[in-house]
Length: 410
Image 1 (cartoon, rainbow, N blue to C red):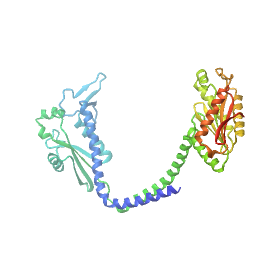
Image 2: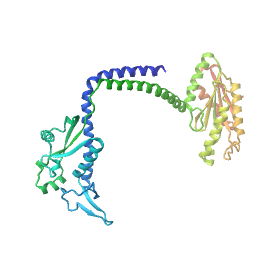
Image 3: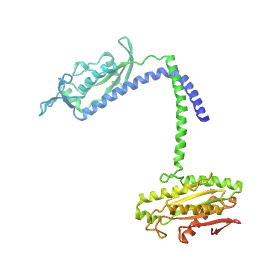
Image 4: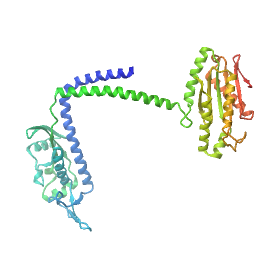
């Protein structure tokens, strides 16, 4: 919670500083927003025009809103389909005018094609558009200016349209050439409301409050999610018991505690006998189910505070038993072995018996400070190997006596 409050305080300071800086930048940003909005309109129209041009125009049914273009020179301008529908070709220019009408009705945005010498008189450039066209001739890539629209503030924007080969199919027929068909698309739209200090201040106040609320709310959610993810990262997804990473952390922690208190520490390494043969014969789904049942047995026999069982890898499991001497560890190992055998999980391919069994290796350090967690695991593995050598389905113990690991038969 303390970190969340620190982040919230930093957020408030940041918002306050940004508000002060933004006071001097607001008008400049407002104008840039007008340019950006106009550019988006232009780019969308230009993209659609290019798409139509790439397909040589598109055909639509002739209707009240889609009449044949009298200025389009094309022998296939109008088509009649076999099912009796009359179609007319829509050129990029015709499409531009139709979309302009739709936008003007819905958003109050007006745009049009403009040229010095257009084929269609509707596209004749206005004085402001001519000024923009002259600017393009001087090398400018766009033109923008604040204007008045019916007494209200507005914004005028214009960008040039590059000529292409298909432009001359119509323009040549009407006696135009490349020099006098230079044109562009002009866009006129309502301007954003004038900058107001109070409005901007309220925006930042509410933004700051929303940010604080979001930081506190989502910070808590993030902490919960992180804890859940951390928990899941320490669990084996198949069996639901802790995984090897969790085991390593637990063993190191219990080793340090037992070393400090000079208390015994035991580790039991468990291996399912002939499990590869089980998987080969019964299939991996059955093998997974067997692993789950064995894991439950280990979990049920690790009930004391500090006790832990984990999946070590493959068919191997491990149990950590703090403050447990070799007799206690051997007793638990035998209990686990007997309980697994009592499950009577059929294993016809076992070289031990006709059901699933465990071999276990126990390592006990009476004085953990004289050894290390890694050495304890190595000795538990040696004890496990000894159990397998002696016929499997049994437990063997290695204990540390006089700073030397020796085998102990329980």
